[in-house]
Amino acid sequence: MICIAIANQKGGVGKTTTAINVATALAATGQRVLLIDLDPQGNASTGLGIDHKSREYSSYDLLIGSAALSDAVIPTRVPKLDIVPATQDLSGAEIELIDIAERTHRLKNSLEDVPGHWDICLIDCPPSLGLLTVNALVAAHSLLVPLQCEFFALEGLSQLLTTVERIRGRFNPTLSIMGVALTMYDRRNRLTDQVADDVRSCLGKIVFETVIPRNVRLSEAPSHGLPALIYDHRCVGSEAYMQLARELIERLPLPEMAA
Image (cartoon, rainbow, N blue to C red; front, top):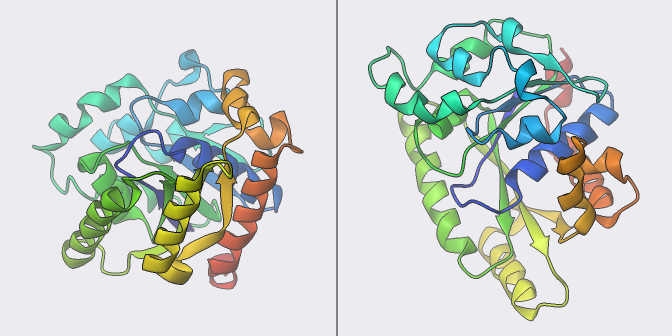
């Protein structure tokens, strides 16, 4: 199972929207996908229509060891897409984990319990670089970074890349950066074009060719508990995420994964 962390310590960059719709797009290609909601806000869970009453176990239980992965997984309305939901309990997880052995490897250890059940695991991280995100980066094979096309984007990205280097040095030497996805792109705004150009000039081919536009349908979909790809598969936002998923698949070692 290939594990991809979707992270950016800056909030409001389209991280959860990216997690939901990339997961849906990958499932539509026939991949068996597991999405782990590691954000205490639980937006990925809500965006996939998982009611709070259905969240008997959550990613919190995985981290503290009170439930196995198989207990916490819930099937979604999207064929081949399962989710480990999040609850408010995650808000206190970082404090509780301080005194737990191997606190940085709790998620990794949980995922190793069910080898081969899914092809791809996506982890929706919280908007911070705390212990929850560290657990995701330790468990992940690679990192997908949604990056909003705005002025402070590169400054925040540099902090994240520094954290990635530290994780590589101490816990996960094989962690790679799969790519940076430019989000909330507005062609009417010249600053958007300038930021996109700056990011590409700094990072080169690591930046995906596909850009995710600002799109009302992407914002509406979560209130209906549906990914945008199901809510309105013809909108420009859905089409962009399908194209992003195609690019992502090209960067995945799928033959090895299937083996």
